[in-house]
Structures are given as C-alpha cells and as structure tokens.
Image (tube, rainbow, N blue to C red; front, side, top):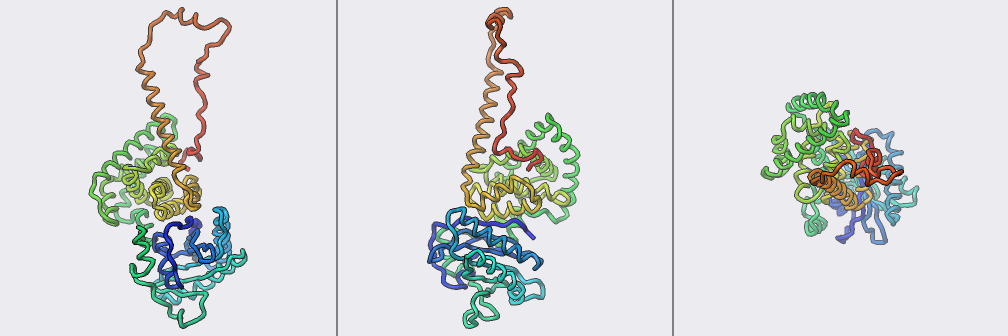
Length: 432
C-alpha cells in the first residue's frame, strides 16, 4: 500500500457548476491535474452550493483487511486538514478509480470496491460530514454507489464523457489547466530504467560508490566531492538546456542519452550528502529551473536496483522544483515516489506536507536565496582579505597597541565560532 496521501488546497479562481455524477466523473482529471489510476480520491465541498475545497489521493490498498483503518485515516485527514486551513467541509465526494485486470470487467471492479466505498462513507459520517456522492470509475465508465435509480445509474454503468467535450473541459482550457496524462504515465517518467542499460548503470554506481563514499565520510574529502558534484551537475544542466526540446517520452529518452552512466552515478552519489543536496535545491526558479528538473528526472531514472533508495534525493529535488515553478500535481507525484523509496526521508516529508497543505513555496525560496547570497558574500569577503595589501610594521610596534593586562581581542579560539544550524540543514549528513 502507498501510505503517503496527496492533497491540495481549495481551487479559488474558476467557478463551474457541475450537475450530477456524469459531470463529476468528467471533472476529476482537471481537479487533480492527471487521471488518477488505482486511487482513492476524496474532495471536500463547502457551502450550500458545494464549492470544491481540499482534495486527497491514496493508492487503493490491495488487501481488503486494510480498508477499515485506511478509510478512517483518510476521512480524518481530509476533514481535520480542512479545519486547519480554516473551514470544515460541509460534504465530501469520493472517487474510486481502478483499471480492470486481464479478464476483469469494470462492473466487477465496481462490485469488488463497494465495501471500500461503504467504509469511506461510514468513516466520514462518523465525523458528522456526509458523503454527497461516491463514484467508481473504471474502463471508461462510471457507477454511483449512492444512487439506487437504474434509470440514471444502470448496473452496466455510464460512459465517461469523451476528452475535451464537456463544460469542464472547455472551462479548463480557458483557464489554462492542463491534464498531464495518467498517474501511471507520470510515475513512469521517474521510474528506474528497465532496459539493458540498467546493468551498465549499476556497474557505474558500484564503481562510483567505492570511490566516493570513503571521501564523503571524510570531512576534507566531503567538501571536494560536494564541489565536484555541483560542478558536474551544472555542466549537465547546460548540456540539457542546449539540446532540442521535444515532448515526453521522447524528451526523456534524449535526456538519458546526453548523460553517461559514470556522470549519472557521480551526481547521484554526491547528492546523498545533505548539504550538497541543499545547495542543488537552490536551482529552483528562472532559467535554471527547467534544466534542473530535467536533470533530477533523469537521475531518478538512473537509480536502478539495488540503488532504488538513492532516488530519494533526485526525486525530492524534482518535486521541489515542480512545486516551486507551479506544477503541484507533478510535485506531489515526485515527492510521493521519494517517500515510497525512503519513507524516512525528512526533506521529502517536509515538502510533501507543505505542498499538501497549500502553503506558498516562496517562504522556502527566500530561505534558499538567502543561503546562496550569504555564501557568495562570504566568498567575496575572503577574497577581499586575501588580496588586501599589508603594511609592514615592526613587531614591537604592533605589540605596544595592546594595553597591558588585556588579552588580544582576535585570538584563534575567539575567531572560530560554532556554525549556527540553518532551518534548511535539518537531518543527518546522509541526505535526510
């Protein structure tokens, strides 16, 4: 079971009136930004007219034994999360989305998931929030778990509207809302390679690990590895930026060809150091953001077995850049995958929670800009001091400047102050 839910804040710009299950089913991809495969989706409604609020997604648990506790957890999460944002839901809409397996029909999916729908309805009702509608979407059709009238909700289901033919599609096109394909397609862009190149990438990671890990564990060597990692990452970003732009999946294939196995391995291993990863996170906006996102996606695909956990760093960076540049659906997918490969990855946990709560990424952007500016100032100050001409004076003359009985103010011990912890430096040096 995927134990990391996804939610978003309320949509507040476009006002669209949806009438009935058909239009609700058609609206789902536009609400989420993608077609949610194999997912439970819950959407909060507010006010007498049912204004859409927070929404939450979770992969459908495979075992029915998990459904009761998961239903209670999801209901509590959506309702309590909405309350923290200032408004308790007046109702909830539930979607269960799952494609049929081979030899299975959409009607069978609907019947198999009926107990889960009932558990979710009961869990929401126990918290005094009614479920207005519960839909199953499978194989291009939808069914209502709430409507018993076969004249409008027949047992064979109703067809979902063709893409681009509904009022929601027209409003979304006018508002510039894009549907980025299916959740499965979005995750595939970040999944490890499964071609013959995977074996070559594993050997490169083995070799890079033998060389770099001892250096990363050494204080002096760690700084050298950090410098080399960031320098190589910048060169790769420049290479990607200069390459012709195409559309997925061709663009991903082209990006993979531009990065050698050894180059990918070196950056992946280098990003396991927390401070190096935090500096790479500064490439989050402007001209750097697009090429950085392409690089992090490509590196995520290079984290082949048995190095899947190493993908937590590039996946988290991909999620952060996506969120920073306004792609919240892409951010939630990448951050969810990061937590799937390493549930304890602190940076991904914090970003995932902040993105789900609808917080503004500008707060973190300001922090990272400040880190970069302070580091640049420190380098400039050191350069100024090293190039400043010194006036030759007799040693005795300098000593007479210090009054008798007083210690000299700038001794070696007083100059070395402990470095203060930064809010962006949480976790261990291993990259948490």
